[in-house]
Length: 119
Image 1 (cartoon, one colour):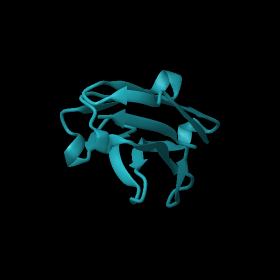
Image 2 (cartoon, rainbow, N blue to C red; image 1 turned 90 degrees about the vertical axis):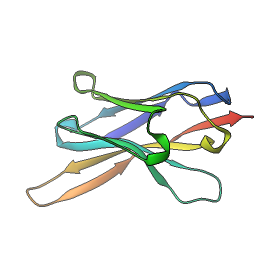
Image 3 (cartoon, rainbow, N blue to C red; image 1 turned 90 degrees about the horizontal axis):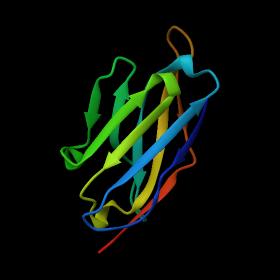
Image 4 (tube, rainbow, N blue to C red; image 1 turned 60 degrees about the vertical axis):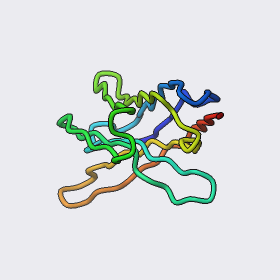
């Protein structure tokens, strides 16, 4: 499975962006997919995930401002980000959790897209 993110860019504080991630390859293996981010000098952190059944999970600081959605027909996942804050400046990565065997799982990352929020 390969993941390609898009939609990053420069936005003013309080603005919105919509990130997209398109999966290709053996997409039937995708068990869950989501967004993570890594700010300069900080560890990568989970932003939001969505399971194959549609269950979503958000980091506490993103709840109410970010929305993750999944379009299985297009093998895509989106992240709508509203009311962005300068602290949201980071590389945003798409990650898929693959069920590669009965007991085996594998994580696959995209190359990331940069979001810069100016104050």
